[in-house]
Image (cartoon, rainbow, N blue to C red):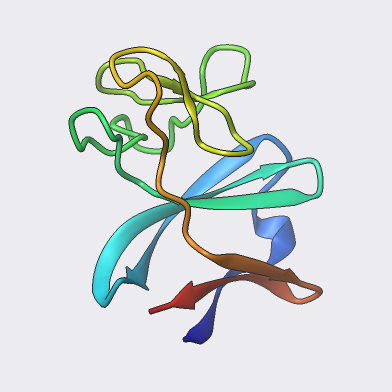
Length: 112
């Protein structure tokens, strides 16, 4: 396991998400990081319903009021904190978390 820096903490504003590419399970994968208050969450950028990017429309990760992550392909809604689908075609499934660590100098993922 190797920690790799994704970004500075202030590169992602509160209630904002950013896409990246990182090595997960030995492969280069599309991932995204989302910030809620002082907490950061990192997920594979892959909807469990049909495999579309969550930001099917690049950079658009949230529902209208910014409280849930929204798949731009079919409208599935996911909780920010745990990636669980709360509405849409993949109810009961979740986004795949990417192990991450927040340090004083940035947000890191565990590349595997």
